[in-house]
Image (cartoon, rainbow, N blue to C red; front, side, top):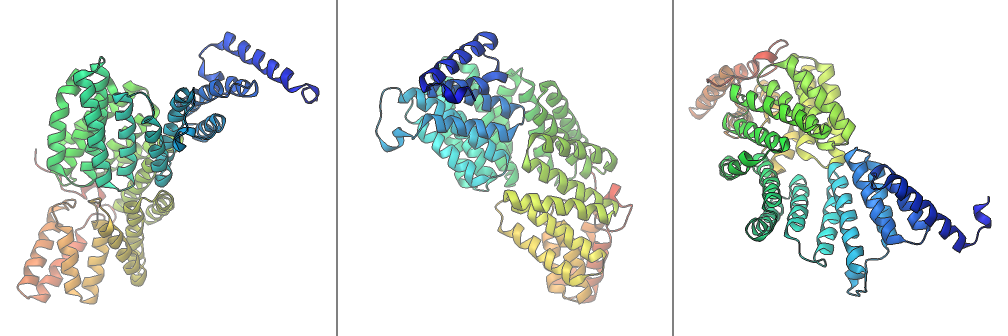
Length: 480
């Protein structure tokens, strides 16, 4: 225990020597930033140490070592000490400390957002914005920060707050395009904001807003050489096609999903490749290409697990469960839905919690447990009705509920489920199923209960995955 016998001054001197040796040997190599930061901290240089630890945190985040990244950012804040600026007591050097403090809070916000810890992410971004207000104005830095905060609001289903924050971010970036020295960087930030806003419009079913926003972005996309921009463009066009075709893919949509994956692979960024693989699998699923979809969704799931992307993991599991349902594979569908439900609850992803209940309703129906099916189906539809997100696959619960209502002779409830299934914001079902639903509603309006019951029963029999082997034809492809 030689170090314990050294004086405090001697220990600081030796840590300073070690820090100098590391810096001389490795320069800006981020692999040694955390080690350098700890030596600087023990040498009595907390600000320089915090800078190194933020660099180490960013590097760990890029490698998806998320726990390590969080530890580095929290250690940086610890070294910076109490936030004197928050109390209005400023001293010399606070500006430098605030720049590092901002980066640390922003990193913690990104990590919490990725892990689905919405309240924690929002609090971190709010703190980062408060720190930013004390620094010299930088419109692009502020626009990026506001966009990230808006993304967290959007994924927490606070859509109005997200939309307002995207407006603020866009205003900052637009000013930088007109008056700033780096127009290319400002245009890149505008693209980030625009694509992020498109996700909000997609989830809310605002197709006209999607079309207007995408049209504004096209000139910026055409100027960009970055494959990540082209990935997001192709992905967004595919999303827009989802909405236009009521989630029954066209060949055009498949082409854009494949182009998005090709662009992601050129970017060499694993999290982008994982998301693009999921995106292609999602389109393949609804195109009836189940074998291809299984491969793509499974690859997307593996990428989500490797990068710590909770939302992507939940989505991949949800749609792998749907794929199993279309194949009539009850065990695989239940297994995927159970995993998705647990993760969705941990991240507050209510629409996917609802999807897990919907899959449980279908499974209970298949197993002849109508009381369980009714309980699970009612819960799924309640959760979707409470959400600001227009979830387009509510047939997952509404079809089993329609079957139960017909079996029990409750035609008023059956008509309600049929109206939901034929709503324009919902996925278009196979032609025979849609026709039977329309006929059943018409018979109900004419007060012909026997005709309505027969048509509704026929619709259930023709619904996606109603019998094993029907999955490949589960959705009707649009012409063209």
